Amino acid sequence: MSTVSSSLTPEWEKSSGSLHILVVLYVIAFALPLQVEIGGLVFTTNRLLLFVVIIPLSFNLLRGRYGGILLVDILFFLHMLWGTIALSVNNPDRVLAFMGSNSIEFIGGYVIARAYIRNVDDFRRLCWLIICLVLTTFPFAVYETITDNTIIVRLIESIPGVSSTTIANSAPRFGFERVQVFLPHPIHYGLFTSLILAILFVGFRGSLSDMTRYGISLVVLACTMMSLSSGAVLAAFLQIGLIGWAWVFRKIETCWLILFAVLITMYVVIDLLSNRTPIQVFLHYATFNAHNAYFRKIIFEWGMKNVWANPVLGIGLNDWERPVYMRSGSMDNFWLVMAVRYGLPGFVFLAFGYLYGLWRIARRDFDSDVLLVQLRQAWVICMAGLIFTLTTVHIWGEIYSFVFFFFGAGMWMITATPNSGEANLTSTSGMSDNRRRVRDSNDMEQVTKAGTKIPYSRFPSHHKRYGA
Image (cartoon, rainbow, N blue to C red):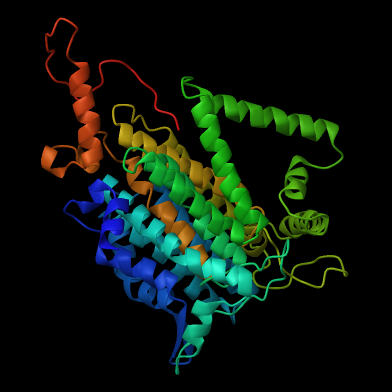
């Protein structure tokens, strides 16, 4: 067993250094659906950990202790502040409990990642930990999709004095049960497993053998598919599509600008030719059945009516206006929920912070560092795909915290220096085996056909673009 485990472990993971204990505890707490009551308040393991660390970590973040203060940091804190103001007006009796727990989950997950994921090796070790967690859940997911037995939750429920997350009891699809494993809904489990797909396939190229990488990717994809959630499946296939685009056009410098132009053209064409808006068309096809597609259309239409009727402070936690035949108040669109609940300012602070962080990292020039190019491309693909996915699902609780934890885990790339500084390439001893191979191959390129060796340079002798 140890031999098999060793063969699956990347060489860089066997080197010295490890993740900060708070990062490890956070991932464990996320995966352990325990709930305990303290002083009349119910805490999950994840929320309890974040409750303890959020104040000192946030204080240090705002002091610039974690790579300086980023605009993303400010915008995310403003989002929570505006949400608190909105609820103070709309639901003064619930603002403390609701915004307290939301702030702990959102800001807490984000600041742990900002504080302790500070370089390439931290990021890859985190990703490997998440991959191992997904692989661990695979047998439980297979068992659940066959038997409809959420075994982890039921085992925890059998322990006296503690409780666990609710069992969703989702209706089967295509003859299979939808799996939630340890999260409160199959959508959340599927979204969680899909987050690591691009990181594994693109970011770990060269760190794992191709067969190992392909095999684990198929297992991760299978976990996502077993959720039988259209939002989670959309997340996975958007990543696959973006990976394919990057590979097909890997020799074209402006491949992402071309994709952006294609999407804009498609939007205009659909807007001109269809009697529905492009967003409504997207929501219609991003689902498994016509019933869900119809209700997503209605949710978007009426959700926007609520936004325009309450553009500044939203409606808070009050029930939103909708047709009488829509008994359920569920709104399967995370971005829309933010706008309805907190008003346009609350939505803009969050959305602009997300997009700005993504844009800053996507624009960084890492061409002299192959590994940073791979990790950046993988993380951007994951986060860009998530933008569209969150228009089809709502997230809360543990997965809400985890999404922005993983977003925060990529923020070090805004200030990382290729081949030096944050990238930990100033010495051979601090270099992973994958980076040594990259550097050594660049050394070999300096040898001419005549056998004359050009003085070593950390920059490649010719420009080369690395696609997926």
